[in-house]
Image 1 (cartoon, rainbow, N blue to C red):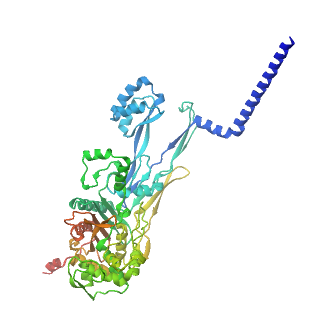
Image 2 (image 1 turned 120 degrees about the horizontal axis):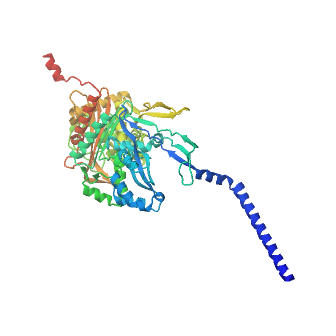
Image 3 (image 1 turned 90 degrees about the vertical axis):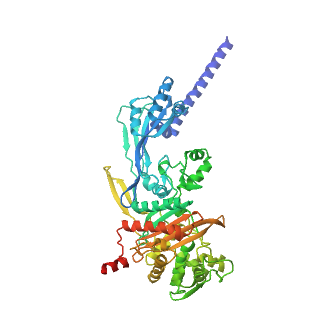
Length: 610
């Protein structure tokens, strides 16, 4: 009996000890949860009974300098499936009705509804009419949410300058990418009280923080002038069966970029679709080629898409050829190393340096102006050698070549200007006629614009103003306009030298190789350029870059125009033949649009006097 009592007693003691340990453990756990983990658990509790909904701000619009809207947001809808709230017996009906209303494949709807995920997107960017038809069905577990989509009303117009946004509305490339923070705005929040199923409770426990919409941007681009540039670039591309063509127009007195066109381009509304064959860009892609593109790997597609999205006028360099002779001329006159009265002799062979440097034809005896009119390599080489490698390099850099301009566009690159330490006389000679030096089109037009602007270089600019929007304490939107003023950067050459250079450039158009840019009633100056193209460090036969840069009117410059035709049909590849006529049309259209009066032609004056 004693043995039994002792057993019971031991069991009671053991039970008491075990219960005490359990109680102390529970007390310790409770203390740990309340004291140590209390704050984090409170946050989780709040999260469980509140729903925090982000309210997307309206992305800022992009306009041209005259208020024409070039990019904006439009309201569309996203249709999604909350799969755990859809009865399996309703699957067939959902699939049939949703695919019919949204006009999409049944397989796509089925995949979303039967997904293992609790939330799956069925279709994004559904228009209002379809969204309302679907909403009338009152399908349980089908969510229809309003979203913003970036829309470009003029499709491929100015595409490589404006850029695009991804599916989340974040800017990619161009203005959209560079000014993404300005355009994005600040999201708002809508905090609601919900039950365990995340459904809103019928109490007024909610707080709403309104979003701040993004700022608008007004570009320096003039949509009408851009139209002339795009038309010219399109004609240059197709007529010459070129790889690429570009037209760039700047106001030399302010640095404002008035037009920036490059072909081929793309439609940013459908940014992931390649719309041309890189080998034959002047011909639209067939459906067969588009299908082949869709079958390519992502890496291959990425290379194509980047090449299509980037802006070659700031992101690619090229050898300017004879257009560079303008800068050599200006430097020589500024340094007093050349004058208008001296005579140069050309026998079509450059003998000042070793090698096989030639000129297009033997020009014989010629003045300095005639040498530029004839685009004579011998004259350019002589001027380059007089300057010497140090001065030639110094002036190239002074004119902004070889370094970024800091224009408000992404992916701008510098250029290639050889160091004087690595240059010999042959390098000086070839650089003097635009070979062995590489620039972006924007760098070149900015340098020539400084000559048109009395030797004063301006900061290139593509933003006219930023329109800021701020909500005040009453949540009223206030508008403030931040004007971007023209910025003078430096005096590159004297006004006197600039005037002489302009007079010579006018003679190039009126009497020389740029005659195809001559416009009756307008005084136009300019220079042609034809450069053999270098690929992987070697010059390639039958591949050229033809160009023309023009200034008008020469006595009171309003615009500087650069036209570039990359890899035209080699049977006709000279800048004076194929690039100058494009520039002529663009200049004439632009000056007419700007209401620049034509001068009375001498023949007309004579007829009136008679």
